[in-house]
Amino acid sequence: MLKLKMEKSHNKQFVLLFIFALILWLFYELAGFAVSGGTPQIDQNIILAFRNAEDLSDPLGPKWVEEMMRDITALGGVAVLTSFTLFVTLFLLIENKPKIAALLVFAITSGMLVSFSLKYGITRPRPDLVPHGSYVYTSSFPSGHAMLSALVYFTLAGMLSYLPVRNRVKTYFYVIAIILTFSIGVSRVYLGVHWPTDVIAGWLMGIGWALLTLVVARFLRMNGHFSSAQ
Image (cartoon, rainbow, N blue to C red; front, side):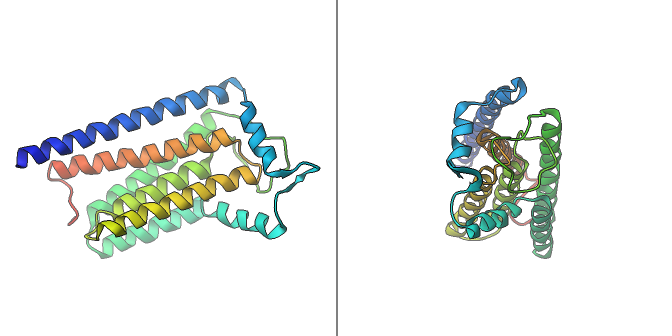
């Protein structure tokens, strides 16, 4: 029985690693457009679809929608994500889960470094089709807000799922992560500060890094170094 359980765990690890490899390949394909300086026509079409055709400086919807999009995009900012990470880390320490807390901090810190390195290594210009609805100061690819929100919210969901909670609660954590990550990515395109492919690439790398964290956590647990009690 134990041997069968171990085999299933190893199979899940291989599946997760395969998905991670697939994500890296998809990211590589998107990065090809950014490095070559090309922009798919669909990128331009999607950005323009969020604008008034008669006045490209006017995003679709009333002014409160534009303001709401700025509020949403702020949820993917470094200050907010760092705060969430700190709050959850302290919560895990209070719950006497130091190893989970340590893995959480390492995963998010290293993921942020990867995000910044990619942005400074792939200097894709920001969209210039429409006026920007939010202040930007780095290059465009990948979307830092999209990548970091996916990284942080999915990693937080994964680490919190190691607590002794019901499966429906674990599902709830991931649903919240999906809603936040998707909304933040859409807001970046709506505000005209990112090409859609920037956002998709950011989602891929953020989810991929969170997935790699899950693989590491499962590996440590399988080898007796990590459990929901630590």
